[in-house]
Length: 120
Image 1: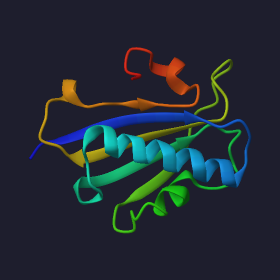
Image 2: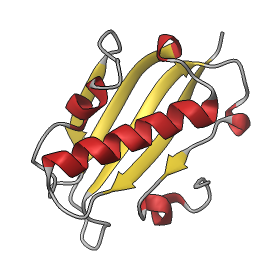
Image 3: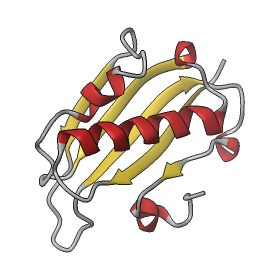
Image 4: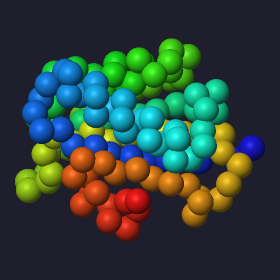
Protein backbone atom coordinates (compact mmCIF):
# COMPACT_ATOMS: atom_id res chain seq x y z
CA UNK A 1 0.00 0.00 0.00
CA UNK A 2 1.33 3.49 -0.80
CA UNK A 3 2.48 5.83 1.93
CA UNK A 4 0.88 9.27 1.74
CA UNK A 5 1.57 12.47 3.67
CA UNK A 6 -1.31 14.52 5.04
CA UNK A 7 -0.84 18.14 6.02
CA UNK A 8 -2.72 20.16 8.58
CA UNK A 9 -2.44 23.29 10.69
CA UNK A 10 -4.37 25.15 13.33
CA UNK A 11 -3.99 28.46 15.12
CA UNK A 12 -4.33 29.16 18.82
CA UNK A 13 -5.49 32.42 20.37
CA UNK A 14 -3.08 32.04 23.30
CA UNK A 15 -0.20 29.90 24.55
CA UNK A 16 -2.44 27.84 26.80
CA UNK A 17 -2.26 24.08 27.50
CA UNK A 18 -6.05 23.61 27.47
CA UNK A 19 -6.39 25.39 24.14
CA UNK A 20 -3.40 23.50 22.72
CA UNK A 21 -5.02 20.20 23.67
CA UNK A 22 -8.37 21.23 22.22
CA UNK A 23 -6.94 22.59 18.96
CA UNK A 24 -4.57 19.68 18.30
CA UNK A 25 -7.26 17.12 19.12
CA UNK A 26 -9.68 18.88 16.77
CA UNK A 27 -7.07 19.04 13.99
CA UNK A 28 -5.86 15.45 14.18
CA UNK A 29 -9.43 14.14 14.47
CA UNK A 30 -10.46 16.12 11.38
CA UNK A 31 -7.41 14.90 9.43
CA UNK A 32 -8.25 11.27 10.22
CA UNK A 33 -12.00 11.61 9.61
CA UNK A 34 -11.78 13.55 6.36
CA UNK A 35 -9.36 10.99 4.96
CA UNK A 36 -11.14 7.93 6.34
CA UNK A 37 -8.04 6.83 8.24
CA UNK A 38 -7.91 4.73 11.39
CA UNK A 39 -5.07 5.03 13.86
CA UNK A 40 -3.86 1.60 12.65
CA UNK A 41 -3.08 3.13 9.25
CA UNK A 42 -0.94 5.92 10.72
CA UNK A 43 2.80 5.47 10.34
CA UNK A 44 4.08 8.61 12.08
CA UNK A 45 3.28 12.26 12.76
CA UNK A 46 5.53 15.31 12.88
CA UNK A 47 4.24 18.35 14.77
CA UNK A 48 5.77 21.81 14.61
CA UNK A 49 4.88 24.89 16.61
CA UNK A 50 5.79 28.51 16.10
CA UNK A 51 8.33 29.86 18.65
CA UNK A 52 5.57 31.63 20.60
CA UNK A 53 3.95 28.31 21.62
CA UNK A 54 5.84 26.77 24.54
CA UNK A 55 3.08 25.70 26.96
CA UNK A 56 3.28 22.02 25.99
CA UNK A 57 4.26 19.61 23.23
CA UNK A 58 1.56 19.31 20.55
CA UNK A 59 2.31 15.57 20.34
CA UNK A 60 1.35 15.22 24.01
CA UNK A 61 -2.09 16.56 23.15
CA UNK A 62 -2.41 14.07 20.28
CA UNK A 63 -1.59 11.13 22.57
CA UNK A 64 -5.06 11.54 24.08
CA UNK A 65 -6.52 10.23 20.81
CA UNK A 66 -5.13 6.75 21.38
CA UNK A 67 -1.94 7.22 19.37
CA UNK A 68 0.25 5.47 21.93
CA UNK A 69 1.90 3.19 19.38
CA UNK A 70 2.27 5.82 16.63
CA UNK A 71 5.67 7.56 16.56
CA UNK A 72 5.14 11.28 17.19
CA UNK A 73 7.73 14.05 17.34
CA UNK A 74 7.70 17.82 17.79
CA UNK A 75 9.93 20.54 16.38
CA UNK A 76 9.95 24.32 16.34
CA UNK A 77 9.18 26.28 13.19
CA UNK A 78 11.78 28.79 12.09
CA UNK A 79 11.04 32.35 13.15
CA UNK A 80 10.27 34.25 9.95
CA UNK A 81 9.45 37.97 10.28
CA UNK A 82 5.77 38.58 9.58
CA UNK A 83 4.81 34.88 9.73
CA UNK A 84 1.49 33.84 11.23
CA UNK A 85 1.79 33.47 15.00
CA UNK A 86 0.59 30.70 17.36
CA UNK A 87 0.43 27.98 14.69
CA UNK A 88 0.73 24.23 15.11
CA UNK A 89 1.43 22.30 11.92
CA UNK A 90 1.19 18.55 11.38
CA UNK A 91 2.52 16.20 8.75
CA UNK A 92 1.11 12.70 9.13
CA UNK A 93 2.31 9.69 7.19
CA UNK A 94 -0.23 6.92 6.57
CA UNK A 95 -0.83 3.78 4.59
CA UNK A 96 -3.41 5.19 2.22
CA UNK A 97 -4.61 3.51 -0.95
CA UNK A 98 -5.36 6.63 -2.98
CA UNK A 99 -3.52 9.17 -5.09
CA UNK A 100 -1.86 12.25 -3.62
CA UNK A 101 -4.50 14.36 -5.36
CA UNK A 102 -7.22 12.60 -3.32
CA UNK A 103 -5.62 13.32 0.06
CA UNK A 104 -7.53 15.90 2.10
CA UNK A 105 -5.35 18.43 3.93
CA UNK A 106 -6.95 20.23 6.89
CA UNK A 107 -6.43 23.83 7.98
CA UNK A 108 -8.48 25.19 10.89
CA UNK A 109 -8.96 28.21 13.16
CA UNK A 110 -7.48 30.79 10.80
CA UNK A 111 -4.61 28.64 9.56
CA UNK A 112 -6.38 28.37 6.20
CA UNK A 113 -4.43 31.43 5.05
CA UNK A 114 -1.22 29.38 5.13
CA UNK A 115 -2.23 27.17 2.22
CA UNK A 116 -5.31 28.51 0.52
CA UNK A 117 -4.58 26.15 -2.35
CA UNK A 118 -5.00 23.14 -0.02
CA UNK A 119 -7.44 24.29 2.66
CA UNK A 120 -10.84 22.65 2.54
